Every structure is written in structure tokens, then in C-alpha cells.
Image 1 (tube, rainbow, N blue to C red):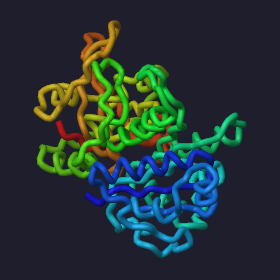
Image 2: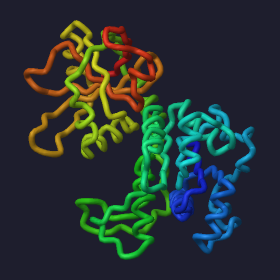
Image 3: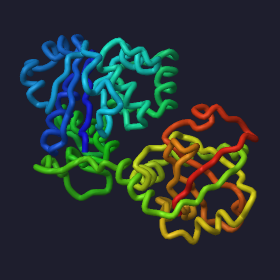
Image 4: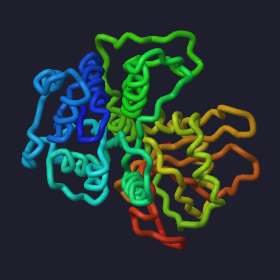
Length: 340
């Protein structure tokens, strides 16, 4: 495991970054820290921590102006990156690949290597320019996670609110630091475990795929019903996909017509297929099969188990907007390697 890159930029809420470092250290996760000068100014204004104290929480610390540092290269293995908090300036730089410092360069590398990038964007209210930047990063594969607190865990202090946001960000890397009470649980597990590591989900999934029999299929891109975005935004759907595929999908599917019902039958018979279990009434079970699109992008095929489902259609989810990323339109051919 290569650990996580932690970027702290100049938005208000620098305490989120400090808490993230503490939680990762308690979970024995290696951290690679880069902090902007604006973040250091906020550290002095908003907290009682010193620069030295914060840097001591990290496994390694990098100069924000050292664009030749290890984390500036995709060949340096880490599991992902979180920018917490993320200023609008940093968001804009990431969205436009404007790599003028090490924090932005590391984020850009994270995206190009298809690793998890989480931006805890801290600004309110938001104008159209802000929103467009967020959409742009999301389409590139990043996760936009504003620090919006929940209240179902009955927070008593500001620290409780901070912990819930940090805990949610850690969930996106499959790290459970037990920082907040989850919905449906019977107690508030406030203690951070002494040992725990990131799941290394993408690498494990890749190793698992290599052990399975590959089914190569080709199909033509077709229009869907336009219902996938709302389906994929349902929490129990997104959580199951993240757990089983090791990525949070772009809110939309790429639909292809493979022209042969035998493909669906092969997927249904495969030992590697997993199931999406409905979290509420009105939904059916679905098979989930791992794969790779165009030889490059990890994906999953969702196959609803319903009698009237089209027999030659495959609905594909991926961490990126596949049509835009691949530059394809309806009618184009796409190859997918599946591991049923």
C-alpha cells in the first residue's frame, strides 16, 4: 500500500485537514502531506496548532513549490489523494490541469492515473463558475465532497461535526476510522482503531480480475432511458457499487447493444458475478460484473434480473463519463473485457 496524499489548501476549515492527518496516523496509513502558504496562514488564524505540529502528523512532508517531488509522478505509488479543505483557486487549477504547484500537480497525477481524488471544497454560496468547475472535475473522475454536516448522529460539539465530515471522506478510500455514528447503528463508536489500513481496493480488484476468465465483447453505443443518473445517485446503490467495484461511479451509464443474447446468459452463469441487493421496495436484484472498457477504464456491467429486460443490452458504469472521455457517440463501437 502506498498510502494517501493529503493536500491542505487555503480555504477556511483547515481543521478538517488536521483531523484527517490525525485519523490516518491512528489507522497506520502512510500520509504524504503538501500544504499551501494560504493554508498555513489559516492554520494560525483558525487553530492553536503550529506548522511544526501539523507536519509532524504526516509520514512525509513536501514543499508546495517542489514540483519535482515524488508525488508529482504517476510512477510513485499511492492509493489516492484528498484535498481538505479545497479552496476555489485549487479547484479551478485542478479542473484546468494548471499545475503551478505541487498540490495541484499531485491532484492532476491522481486523476490521470485513475486513482481516487477527493476534493473537500469549502465555499458558500456558489455561483455558476464554481459549479461548472465541480462538474468538470467530477467528469474527470474526481469526487466533490463539500463539508456538509449530518445531524442524525446527534453531534454535541464542533469536533463531532468535523469528525463526521472527515469520516465520510475516509469512507471514499474504504477506511473506517470509526469517527461518527452511522445511520442504523446502535452506538457511537468514537474511538479511532490503533491499526487499520486502506483497502487498496483498485489493486485488489485488478488482481482478482486477472485470475478470472475473460469475456471480450463488442457492442454499439445506444441511447438509454435516461433513468440511470437517478438510480446511481441512490445511497444504497452507490455504496454497493463502491464496495464491490472499488470506485464510485459517474452518475450515468454507457449502454451498448452487443447483438447476441448469449452474452447476458454467459454473465448470468459466471462465478465472478456479484449481486446488487435492493435497499427498498420497487427495485429488483441485479447482477454486477467487473470489467475494463477500451482496455483502460475499470467498469462494471449492471444486469437487472427482470423478465422484460432487453436481452442484448449491457449497461456499463465507470468512474468517468465514458462518452466524453472516450469521445464516442451513439452508433460507435466499444470493446469491453468482462470477468464473469
